[in-house]
Length: 298
Image 1 (cartoon, rainbow, N blue to C red):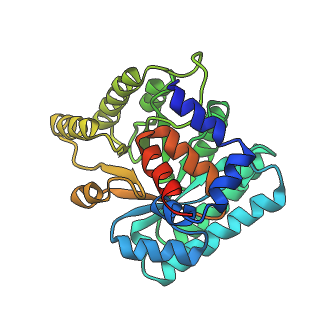
Image 2: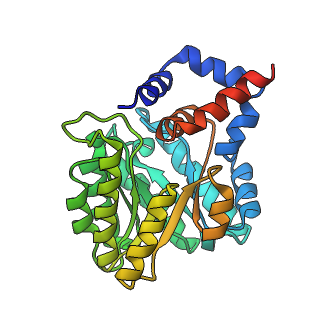
C-alpha cells in the first residue's frame, strides 16, 4: 500500500486526530467540500443546487447496536420522504451500507432493514444501491442483494476492482436489468484478497468494464480518472452500449461532473470523519488541499 494512504487509514482510527480535525476552526468549511452537511435538510438542499443525478449516503457503518441500525433506517426513510416532497426523488437514489443497518449483528436483520428502505424508495419512484465494504462482508452483501432483487430487481450492486474475485463477480452480475457500480475500492485489504499495485487495479477496472459493457445490465462507472473515463467511452462505442453512466464523489472534479452529466455520490450525516479519511486515502492528492486549509486559519 502507498505509505501516505496507509498513514491516512491509520489516522482514520486515531481518536486524537479525529478530535483535531473535528475541532479545527476551518474543518467544517473543508468538510463541506466533500460532505453535504449533517441533516436531511442539508442533503436535500445540496441535491437541489447540484442539478445533477445523485445517489445519497447517510454516513455510518459497523453498527453493533439495533437502536443505531434503526436510527439509520429512519434517516433513510426521512430522506426519501423529503426528496419526494421536494420533487427531487426521480433523479436521487440512495446508497446503503449494510453494516450501518445491522449486518454485523445479524444478516437477516440487515436484509429486513434494507427491505424497508427499498420499499420506501419504490413508493418514491427511485432506487437503492448497496454499497460494498471491506472484503469480509462481500459474500454477505451479495447474498442480501440476491434476496432483495427477488422483490426489487432494480437494486444496485457495487463491485471493487482491487479484489481478485471481482472479474468473476462482474460476470455473474452482468445480466439483464442488473445495475452495477464499478469502483476501485477504498479499504485497506491484504494481498491475499486484493491487488496491491495501483496500475494493476486500473487494468482490472478496464477488464471489469468490458464485461459490464458487453453484458445486458446497466453499468455505473465510478471514477475520477480522466484516462479511465476516456477508455470507458471508447469501449462503450465498441460494444455499442448507450445505457450506462459515470459517477463521481461530491466535491471532486465538479466541472467535469457537469460536463459529463455524472451521477454524484453525495454523503451526509454526523459520522463524516471515517468517510472523509477514506476519500483522502483513495485520492491522496486531496490531502494537500485539506492540510493547507487546516493550517491556513485558526
